[in-house]
Length: 106
Image (tube, rainbow, N blue to C red; front, top):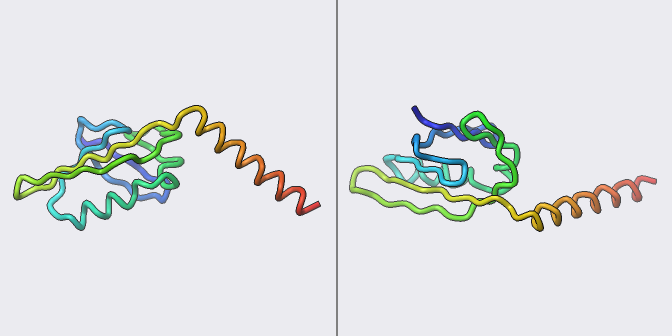
């Protein structure tokens, strides 16, 4: 049974049973399929995403590695969890933007 990643844009992709939210493994036939999946792994598209039915938060894509056996392409999409400093900086930035909007509207 595959594990499904549902991205913020609504697209879903199935990954192998050994996959985790931080290390997704997929086997495809073409590099075009691989490129389509790789395009989903953006920081914005991981916000509000779900992996295997559970919400994921504060995930940042790190790398994509692929290898072929001549017939299939196996790829690993690696992500990491943001540090608390990164999360705090993002929240401060969002609050500053909200305050600026309020001040402009006043």
